Length: 175
Image (cartoon, rainbow, N blue to C red; front, side):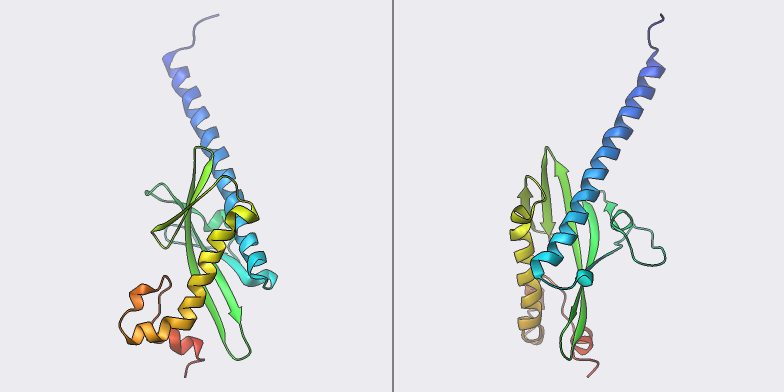
């Protein structure tokens, strides 16, 4: 039996790397799907409360976006995916775009919200994700409670979710 050539060793290293990335991506797809499903359950809304949507760098197809198509591994080493939170009150309807970024490193998940708040999780369980969901809930709530006032005071940058005159008009039904 002849020894393995260097070329064959490189081919095997390539195949091993492909398998590790495939496994990593599969873990991350599971995390993103669990995250979205858990957020809808945490908020106690209808099943279609949360939907995936593509972010920059993701191809857009027809129909609803599934988790695999919504995810994008960026140069910053984080997976990025978009969620659309649909809200429907008596006389108001809104859809808040949320951008989530996370990565799995050394057996734990790091979730980064709004570009500066990190949450480290050992697993994507409802209990582990509760602080992340609470932060999202509080940010959306503050967006509605304080958005107009902060916008008018020119302190809208204090909100995690963008607030603008156009967004207020959408919320108010075009008034």
